[in-house]
Image (cartoon, rainbow, N blue to C red; front, side, top):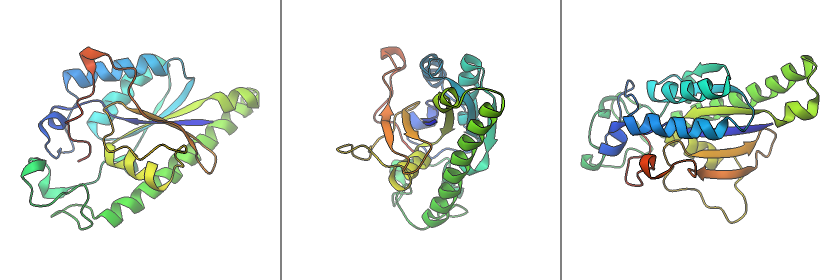
Length: 219
């Protein structure tokens, strides 16, 4: 089975380069991006969706679910790193880079705590993928067809970056992306060593819903 690692659609605060409060929704362009991705995923046998419970990820997941018929499960483990009292502040005006700093922002989450949570999130989604294969086999679906199914994971930029850098084997010659596009798609195997076959792909986006390379990725 393959796992589809997806960043949520664009939000107004991504474009404004502001660390986002938890309740930030998608922008109009973010909704269009989600629909473009959903049309692509409709061809990929999505069996289930696991998503962050933050609104921007939930909105993206619901658009995918409408196109694929896949059920959604929400998890706090897939939330973006918590920047505490810095949420709502302009990223470029902060005295240090919150996306890279090891210490916690006031009232927020340290890099070590965040990475430990991402490790639990990764184990969780791999377990969900394994359970899907068993369920489909038990429903008299041949194992070969079960293996073709996919689990979609809708989450956030820093979560994806941490998974790609610490838990997924990238193809030879492929570097860690410096910017993860909104609704970008990365694909990796459910079985260890979790090798990726696609990283940070946004080819489903056309000029009317393209990713803004200057938008904030994370936070």
